Amino acid sequence: MFYTPENRDHDLLPHDPLKAIIAPRPIGWISSLNMDGVANLAPYSFFNAIGSNPPLLMFSSEGHKDSSRNAMEMREFVFNYVGQAVEAEMNASSVPAPAGVSEFDHCGIERAQSEIVSPPRVARAAAALECKTTEIIEPVDINGNKASVVLVLGQVVGVHINENFIQEGRFDVNIAKPVSRLGYLDFGHTSEIHELPRPRWQE
Image (cartoon, rainbow, N blue to C red; front, top):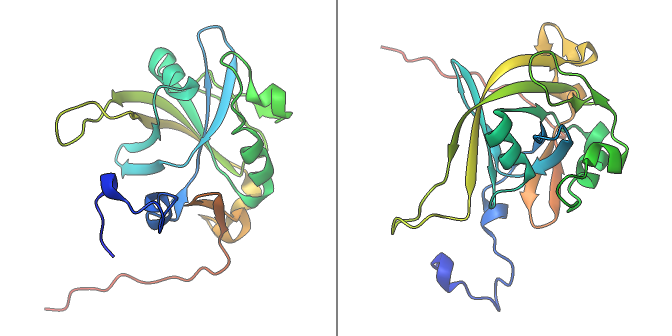
């Protein structure tokens, strides 16, 4: 079948499949502080690293929400790693709490102090990346109209890793057990991991 996004067959595809097609995606579990010092914590399914030198990452918000607003106003945020051990807490923090309510407190999620930035991190997360906001981008569609999306880019300025997840000098995803976003209400667990050496060019 073929369709354009504005002409989807809602009888055949009552739910938009795009988020399921573009999967799996890492979960951006973002902690931030508002101008009153209230800590916010929320998961974002549009998240990824975008470069390594310097280390940059991004998360995308469907419209301005607490995380994007805080990252814009305070110019910093923290990415918290979502492994199976904290999957329930991550899901709990997706509750649509009113602005000014801390999901850390509402959901009983233990926080830990960051080293460089002000927002706290999730204490039980296998890893956390402290970030300084570099850009806030409001993308446009093909007609030049603003999309209902806010793209937050940040540079990693500090890295926390629970040493229990380091094996032979590597952050071991076999132990960290990452949780991925698959679309709809679906999430994925990593069950099999294998190395795939990159081929070398032979003259």
